[in-house]
Length: 313
Image (cartoon, rainbow, N blue to C red; front, side, top):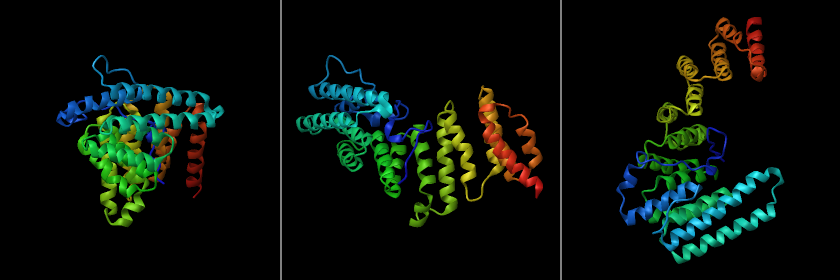
């Protein structure tokens, strides 16, 4: 199974990127009843709800009510943490599913309901059911990058990364300026590297280039997202022939951007690690001497131990 993760550590089927006009080329040039009211206001601002208003249809109003209930159910579940009543949550999820099914019986061509329902099923681990619902959403409107992205995530997490690849590529084709899609492509290529190589779809150099390019695009499209920049810098380690000098440049650029002392010292640990790999212990020691924050003392000590062993040799 390939579990795709967001930069903050969340599973990616728990988050949904907001898509700007730039990311969705005028929502593929609209019509289609203004693309089902801009996909029911981007599936009610991607679960934050509000919007719609006086002219909303019955299907839109019903979807809004279901999503409000869903948001409350999962917010309560998150708040309860380990104390969660699993029986109650299962019952509430079944009730939500029934509400979606009734809505889809009443409005069988209402794509936003399929999108929201598929996302909900994905959240509760019903991957195959979620995929079936999202396939239908894609049939109704094949120009929704959100749907193709969600399909890719679910297929990857179901252990089918090769099948996931064309879906995430299709999402990128439709929304080339959405950084999360590029980030997920990089994660997919990295996590399922051996499977992609086994199929013959990539040579190792081509796969490495595609992975590195994906992380680079994500970092460039979201310059304020340091997590994307971190993963881009780390990607130089993951190449068949690691590019240590390029990694050092990337970490140096990040250090120039961050403000906190802890972040700067964490970056120096990364740089010191690279110097050790390059056989430059004096450079590593110089950097490690500048790391004084107790919160990363354990990581510093690990590198000091490596440094000592290299000096002994």
